[in-house]
Image 1 (cartoon, rainbow, N blue to C red):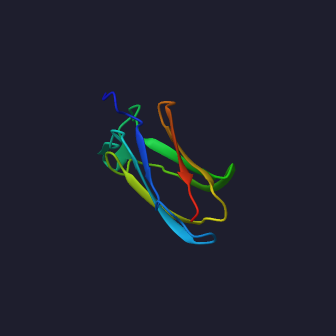
Image 2: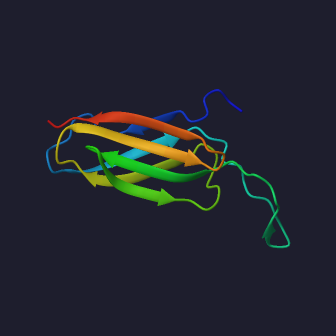
Image 3: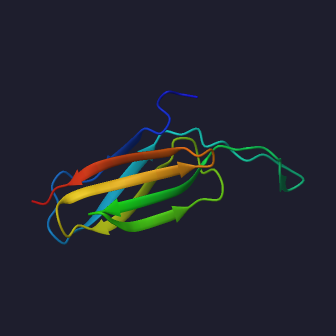
Length: 110
């Protein structure tokens, strides 16, 4: 596997007005193995794909996403949130092999 696995990039606007609804984009480097199927049933194998994304803003969970199958290699996720205060936005990914990957960016109000 690549040494970059689990690297996360979070993009939010550089300056945000208080109370503004902000669109964030998150890229995570991950192989996201595709589940093989035979006769409509998954082939028994230990697949490695992201199965959970948790987003915290100002220390509070604002989004939790559960994934039941691989989406695509190095997926990009987008979501919106209301920026009420300046502070940290943290994104955590978990995969089916027990990996935990996390990144934080600062939300800056103008």
